[in-house]
Length: 281
Ligand code: PAF
Image (tube, rainbow, N blue to C red; front, side, top):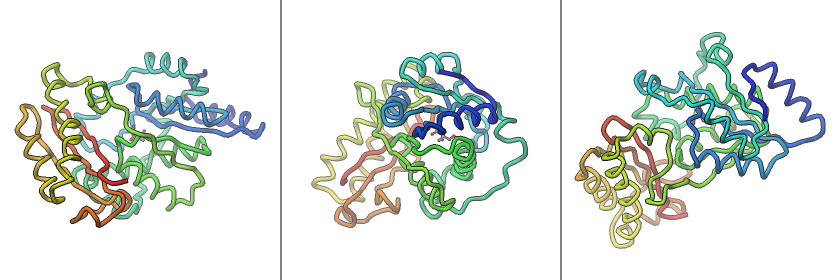
């Protein structure tokens, strides 16, 4: 495994790999890797001849400076983990390498980028599209792997790929959870032990809401999830929406779509956590 920080160096290496007709897979990350990322990397390694993992804390997607400041940075440990799962190249550029000039591009990604996270984190998905489009331009992967914990992000990236006529195949991979059900996230390390205990309520309530939904309406299920979570110390729901899994628009009835997902964002103290659950798939 090689760690590369310059675009030109990575492009040379990738050109060599491609000459042999090899297929290139990519896993874009912001580092602070956990088992959820490693599952993406393992799949990328298994399905492609060459696996490129990018580690870059992208400033343009943080609408909260404090969040950017506190985002964990653990490059050395990340590289050890990546080596252990067979990654070929780690691309870990500095900010100046990816943004030699300010990126002023504004992407029209449609409603999938405007609802939920789009409403609560203005500019976030535009920043994601800026960096992911740059990474795709540099690496030109055949496939790119993303985790379904960031369910809306996958829809936004699919929309970006269409907008740019990019040939990259977007591969969505299931959420990886701790044994107690908590979705793995780089932000979990910021929780105090007490908050971590209370945060289990998020996935537990989502799972229970599946049973609840069998005998209740969509709106009753939304109210059930929000009121249950807000009653748990440390937790405050920012939004919970039950949406069509493709359009991400809210559904009114369970038979409105064959693909229905509940998407949630909860503050646990200062830490913003997201999760989701499929009701119909
Ligand atoms: O999901 C993430 O970690 C980031 O949003 C991504 C896709 C690496 C872009 O910075």
